[in-house]
Image (cartoon, rainbow, N blue to C red; front, top):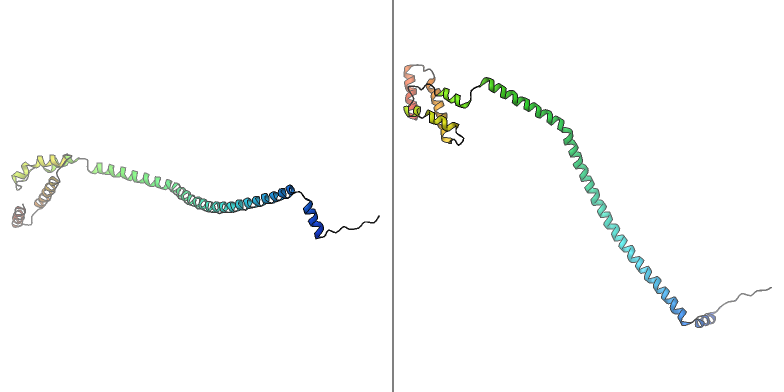
Length: 187
């Protein structure tokens, strides 16, 4: 058997196209258009995915920053927790020291403020003004009162200074007279 190759020239191709019905050509063109639309949709989705990818990268970077910040905070908290035993020991030491100071103060100064003031003004001095001596009890009560006038404290302090000054042993009688005169001039 012998076979011969069949070649199609331009005229034969046109004849095939012309022999196809119009509906078949329209269907082929519609399929090509559909494929083109799918390609455009795919390209659009690829662009959207690219934008989403950029947004995801930005979000991941922000999340990493937050994780890093949380790591620093956690480290700070751990450091503070590690320092708590030392702080507790320091607090216990301060409490012990305060208790010791309170005990020592109670041993060295067993009297309260009222008894201290009573002792200061128990024996009036002859050279103090009579009006000041008569106001000692009122002055003491005003100092001890919860709404004490600041002026009462100033008077009490001045009286203490004058009492200490006048109780000092003078070098001579003339010196004592001069001291009394100086106090009289002040008051």
